Length: 250
Ligand code: FES
Image (cartoon, rainbow, N blue to C red; front, side):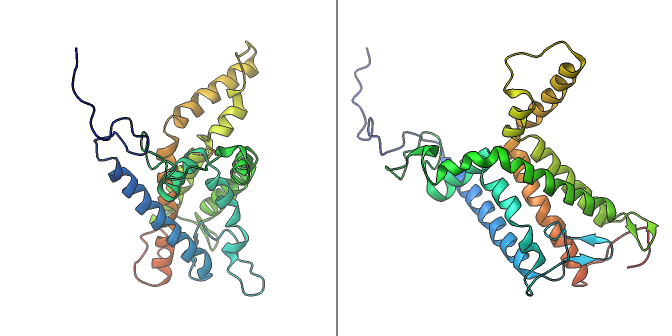
């Protein structure tokens, strides 16, 4: 029979019993997310240097600007609504910024958190509708990527094209691994039928489930691939780097 005395902190709800360095993951997530938010805000408000040759930063699918505002401001609310209500990002920023809780089995810092059943967090449930915004974004993203293969009436391939292509692919995987979209596709069903349509639906759902398993990973990768794409276009337009391409024009 174990007669060991309980430690001083045992049974205290406000002290974590975890002995592993859980704060390392917290610190890394906090740094990476803060870095991204700072860069994205800066890039959105710049309003210049977002184009070079056939390339265009994914932050700027349009050129138009009213009252001298940055063109990115007309679109930035779409990814903000979609990403900030994403199940994975909710978990992440609740942890890093609200510490509610900072990690699994770590006590919460707030005692009056009412979950997502009351205002304002109940609005997070809008995510299922913001999937439509993600589809619009994805279309704009791919339009920019595919049109970058054509410049001055010629088809060509450059490093910039490949970077934009990879970025659009990661964004596509992130969006199609969405929990809400997966539910919409077939997650709400209790069982699949035997018709051809049901079989196709099952196949699509299976592929989505495969990516959905690592939704958090795609969320991070797609976040930083956007930064890499934007930075690449800016560095070209600042004349700091040269693009290797088949057009021989730069
Ligand atoms: Fe993350 Fe929908 S749950 S994008």
